[in-house]
Length: 308
Ligand code: B12
Ligand code: SF4
Ligand code: SF4
Image (cartoon, rainbow, N blue to C red; front, side, top):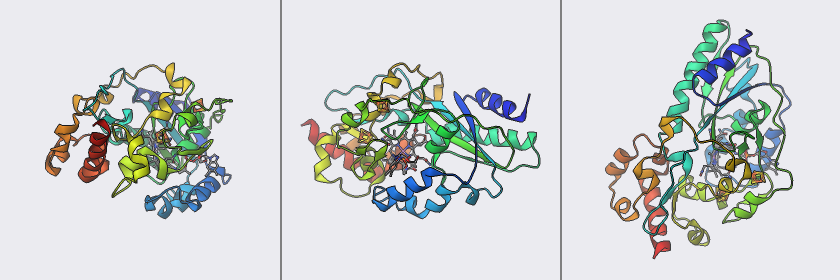
């Protein structure tokens, strides 16, 4: 078995559903797309996206001598059905179980250690989400799927209910074929977006995206988006829910991604009474912490207004 095969086998053993490898070459078209996206101001208040642009465009700035990227995806789809009757808030699917940063992070570290042990002269670094890595572009290049018109990575087998992570490495690994775009003439995700945030195929203006508005943006949510928020208090899945590739996806066997009653059926009145300390304790193991107590309270107040 080659090193590439051993690394892939290890990734699957660690519980990732998909794994692929890309070689890091100077040819990186996504670097220009990122520059254009930032120039249009589509990142809104996410100043960290602009600050880290050079690293995102060039992974050698994160790991000098980098040769390859091992991209992995973990299925977070469950059969848990949220209760969207008035009085309940809606939390996006990826945040209903344990924080994926932790779930993937530990296993990615194990994968990086494995590589280190198998190729002692190499250096490796593991990332999930928060690193300055263009995860979707590398995942597509590694053959995990393609970037759909909603701009998320879609796998023909798992749909887009995949969270992504990767190990950057100086080890020499054999690359996979990039994923081919299977969107065809479909435009369901663009038409499903309640705020017109997908301004053109493959491009999301974060400033209009309910995920950004409920999670990343600080301060008041602009009036023009408040009605469209509905009962969403953290994230949005509308463009993913309609994707035909998600309808044939199989739910995950990963227990860490099972929803909790708090994230599946959050009671708006109860949440509105939560103190900052109670918020911290309740969402201790959840990605919802990212919104902050203040940010969540702001979305809860709009969801309550929308329900009345
Ligand atoms: C910033 C960010 C956001 C922002 C901006 C979203 C976005 N589309 O970029 C906000 C807060 C809105 C967001 C929302 C969500 N996010 Co987010 N987010 C990220 C983050 C940190 C960086 C993404 C990035 O580089 N954006 C910058 C732009 C330039 O990149 P892009 O959209 O990928 O652009 C590509 C295409 O647009 C394309 N392109 C093609 N033609 C053209 C033409 C032009 C003119 C341009 C500009 C671009 C372009 O080129 C670009 C490069 O490949 C990544 C983690 C990471 N480190 O990569 C997670 C990540 C993308 N998010 C993720 C998730 C799960 C979500 C949500 C589904 C969460 C939710 N349910 O609420 C939503 C989905 C919203 C959506 N439709 O995209 C996952 C996606 C997994 C997957 N299967 O793809 C990631 C990978 C995190 C992870 N580790 O799993 N997110
Ligand atoms: S996450 Fe929601 S608001 Fe954002 S692009 Fe998708 S459908 Fe639109
Ligand atoms: S809904 Fe249609 S256009 Fe959007 S990502 Fe899925 S297949 Fe592509």
